[in-house]
Length: 542
Ligand code: GLC
Image (tube, rainbow, N blue to C red):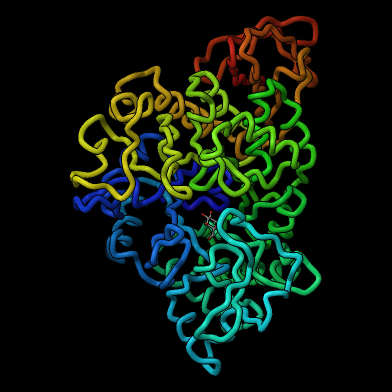
């Protein structure tokens, strides 16, 4: 394992759902041993940190985000020994492992909640948030609007209402209770002692509740997260905390603190704007949101993504943009879920190869460390007829054999995608690994190129001045003596574009980072570039 501090600034992340990745024992559910089997694949792709969806014992009413035991492994996935072996094998390949850690709530099955609901005098009663009326905290929005009518649910046994920001099967923990805080930190230590490299910390804006607020991003929440960071730094200085705060940039900025809170945060608002920019053939949505994005401390990093295991969330767009996004990307109401769209990358972009690759060009070059969602590197499809978000969590398609090579079992936990053009006969890893023009190879190449240019992870970001600023998203990434010019043609038409070369004195056309070939024509103070339909160029200016 390399010991580089701030390793996450340059890392390529890969998000995977253990249940869906590879089944090693033929029971139809993916497992940790299955992930171990596929580590060579991930290493070959160039990934250096894997984020696992929750792996803890759970009734799985929210795919493991309903934790019933913070210090165990779900029996379908294997054992703690399997997990230790996974870490060992991953580290051997220079791949780090982080898991989801759900700090805001537990499952209603968790022994803490069982004790709390059964006995008013139990020390665990105060682990959760109770009320005699469902009227408290009216300012807090409901997140799962399609399922939940209130953030309060009456509990017959407890004789009170309990508070929950997500499903009613996920009671919120009471962070005003110091015992909750220390139990959670202890649980984190349990996993870090095992050698894990950090956590994707789930749903952090909602830890505290206060009257007269919307119960999000409260100062108390930041204070606790700083305490969490201090604890992690003291015990495991190389571990990373990646925060899930689905908020506007100025609010997410607060989660970095002064470099003493979360190391990383997803850039939720950028994500839908990548899709908007592609569909509108305009860089404006991206420009506006990046302009609205405050600088972050040097030891922090954004995390960029195109898709993940949830619906493509549209919480961070305006009401009218949301309606537009639905009309463009979710014409069938089945495609919508809560305030988002439950579809995968390839189907969202009509399986248009050039557009999918262009989306990846943006993913890998905008500020932040990129995350690839399992299966998107081969352009997997979705199944909108499955429940909730299951349609974007179907088995990984390894080959065109039985169950796409995911399992030998006759029945899989979720059906393999079986309709053309996304069925395993058309989309699978084995075929794409044998085809140098495949999405797999293009993704792998982008990862490889990105890894040797530190400007991507460490560099400044500055918009360039192309002659067609709307159609062309062009920007500089620069770090120390390295300056890269990234040019993305957002349109489905060929484009010739002149870009002003502000500071750079070029005597020869710059090399393309992929081919090394000199590219473009130098004019007086600018460079003229030709881009194919939805084409992109990554150039090295110095
Ligand atoms: C996060 C997860 C989501 C889960 C929710 C509740 O938003 O990404 O999958 O349902 O938290 O834990």
